Image (cartoon, rainbow, N blue to C red; front, side):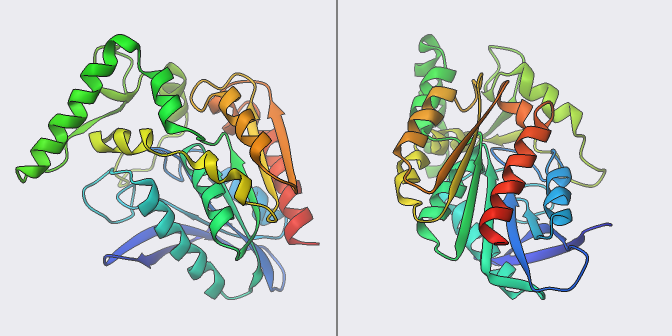
Length: 299
């Protein structure tokens, strides 16, 4: 069953492109809102999970962030975590208005960068009754220090500064590759695992690729510490899905964040790294998330 393709208006005259999955039967149904992480599109492994939630009896709304994919917004491929969270609140408001949705039983699922968003939303939007944060970013500053070798940090900072000066002069924000396998090439990431992941989920013709991001996206990511909100999600139930060998959103940072969260909460550890959550460990991660939403949204 194909999802409905819809556009949701958000601030600034922008619309976000989304998929709306509806279960069989007669509502009202509980509902889940989903989004991908840093540079990810809904085509990158989210459909199979959305279908699993739908088959478990949920309405599911999956959107692409502003300026990515078929969503509108300028400059293109620009990542601002707080703007994305603001847009996501509007997505939740839209979901409340969908026919056959029980607006008292709404959940949020986010992964990676959007896993951090899910914790912030869970702490600040009490319309949400269940939260799943899969391999979430928790501390962008510490994560960035680990990812960028010490000898390159001055050059990266100067790249941020040059971009800032250019914008003062009226130039558009500079862009960089999202991911490069060449260590000396400016990019947000240098990861073979990320390259393999995106290659395994090709996007359809006509959908703009997300192979670059703005330079300032990396700067804003380094300033983003959504793990500080984990202790404020309660009393909304929080699940965190964490890989044992995650080097993108490091395992130890995620576990420290989980310790700060209050009950009700659940930690699910899976074997592998960041991108195994979508593929090799999909059965583990999808089953755990489905069980969490069934327990807290369908009971």
